[in-house]
Image (cartoon, rainbow, N blue to C red):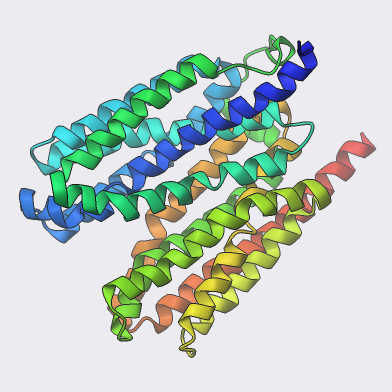
Length: 401
């Protein structure tokens, strides 16, 4: 029979599997709309602007509840909070799948977004508790393949399912997956040991934010700019490729290449983090490379080579970002740290596509749009440089004390 330590050692992989299925549910909800959007527009007779709201409304709650969700995960048990998130996700998804007009669908997306973005704060914290002593980067690398995989599933299958059985079918299928995953979460959720549940004097959210210091904010800004650049590219690149003479299928293939890069290379990047640390170097290299590559779209026609390189260098950023909060913060504030990261990510997702699209409207060309996306990626490198400097300064101050 396994000794207690060996059982704990093996059980962390069960936790990682449960967490992976949970973050996959986030991706399935988020990306379930685009593949079936033409079917929704046709049946409900809504405009393209209104259909765009169905994407924006899902991300909107992340602007407001991520910090609170992270704070609550540090102060209360994650099992009841996690189940609450799943209930919101299930309820919101069913509202979308059964809704008869835009307002019901929009409300369902908001409700699902509240649960999904709050859950996305809990999950990396749970990984950091089980893998804090070893292989944290590798575990975060696996975790960060969940969203790309979910996106591939949605774009690969949901459109066909919607065409065969109606647009509601893939939405309701997602609801069924959420129900099964919530059941697994309820059964498998466990903390690594009772020693992690310390009786702490309650501290307000504002005091907790002050206690975290500046490094986590610079890390979060790096994540903000990365998401701003990547989602802006994913939003407008297909139309850019079509303007250059590619078919819809070819433009979809070119867009999918960077996504596959993250899917296949995030886990090896996590291994590099465990082996060499140097997260800031990986993030900085990824940011400056992506900045150069997106700027190059303005004067090069080697689009396949560019998107392949984007897939390689974009994989250098997520795993190192998610491995930094447990190293930077005290255990009692790790959840709030992930809340800061999630909030900044939501800002990038919500605001950046509008700014890039506005640049296209004002100039009539994607030239300045790609310059703006290039600037976003450049700011990834600048922000992580200040994060590194701030971490060194904080560590030096702590040593003096």
